[in-house]
Image 1 (spheres, rainbow, N blue to C red):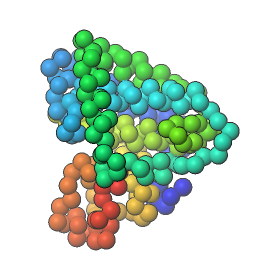
Image 2 (tube, helix red, strand yellow):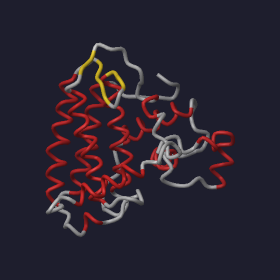
Image 3 (cartoon, helix red, strand yellow):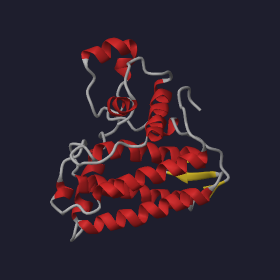
Image 4 (cartoon, helix red, strand yellow):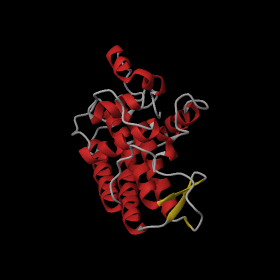
Length: 229
């Protein structure tokens, strides 16, 4: 594991995943269709769009936990994220377009909430039943705990995105610490800026711009931020 990745044990990671997924569900349950069109921190997506993107991740989790393998792991909870940078490929533009079109296909957008809830709950149950072992996803092989960590990071950061225009509690401190550990791992050392965990999650992933004070504190680290997109 890369330096700086302060990750929880497997059972705790599954619990964190369940907690963050439930927060997402709570945030969108009962919203009127017009509220699902509220903005998020991701410029390209509304709440409805981002929820569909999260649904795809929960669906992928179900497929992954049904794909055990004896092959050795080739990435871990940190190195899995190395290709996910806004300066790589098209910066996610094609996926953003797909998500907008697909999420708009729901005749009643509130049906998406139920689809998300059922799939997310199933994904958490599958994570809990997976135990140890290695699994295939997106052309890679990960240890079970490392894969669950990637789900926690994705869900936690996107929960912050999802709720920027909604009234919702902050994510669990433990989940934010998993995000910090992964960002430090990508950086190869702890970030020099005196950020709290939420600020680090937002600035380390490019959701918020670096200030002049941030750049002074980070010094040579500044040119490497954002660490993932």
